[in-house]
Image (cartoon, rainbow, N blue to C red):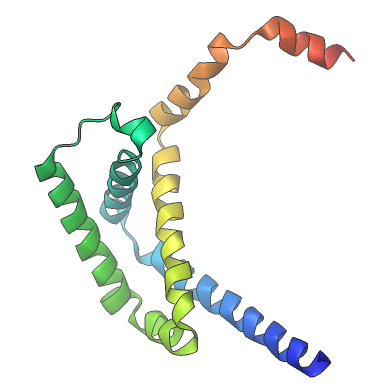
Length: 140
């Protein structure tokens, strides 16, 4: 049992390191335009959630263009810019590649949150908070 646990731990450690290596490559090789495409793709994807859909009006031609741009970006990152890292990830563990795709979402959100207007909009809700209740909470 202990030997098996040790081997599993090493595999998990290697998997984590490989995911980190692939994610780092994506981060370093994705240029400003790529990150804009990722942000657009993330927003568009979230806009299909039923509670958000009514707030967005993404037309079909925009959806097609966004999907085309992100497909070209991801294909380039996987097959050109991070080719070696991708091959190693696939050979090490096929799940590593799907885990690394989660990093595209992180890059997209970093791009979105790096914008000052987005941060202002996020903070706007606090104008409507009941400050008296908050003060009362902090009193004791």
